Length: 183
Image (tube, rainbow, N blue to C red):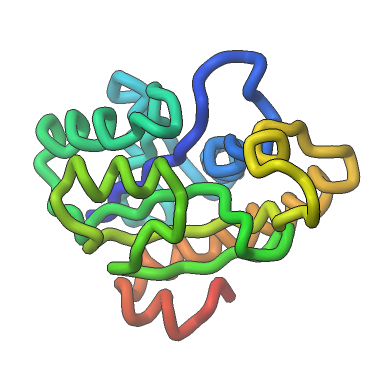
């Protein structure tokens, strides 16, 4: 079984910010007609997609403390790190692009660093949602900035690509999903 956790900062003031794109995308996927989701508590959902079970989770902690939430979820749900896929923003990926990778470093993302430290390994998946780096803009201002209407339209494509990766992970496993590149 696969476990998907979306990283985001809690609170209304952070909704629709670039840092919260993981939660934005996972919520959109969860509300698609092909998903049957049932809340099981603590921002966790048992989800059925194409006859396959998985778990969607939404970190309730601030980005830099994401590892605390993931470690508690791992303890309660008893999953292995290699069954986990973290969905998060990535400045090194173009806006709207999605990349799936496993067992990679944090590349400066504090939420990923927190999770790797809490789990004691980097052996988990990352579904990286591109928010694009802006030249000359301070990183904190950019990631905490809100998406424009045009950017939100671009994220619709990213949502479908992320959903394709999730469906392929459920159907074909890690190697199959990687070979299909979100199709």
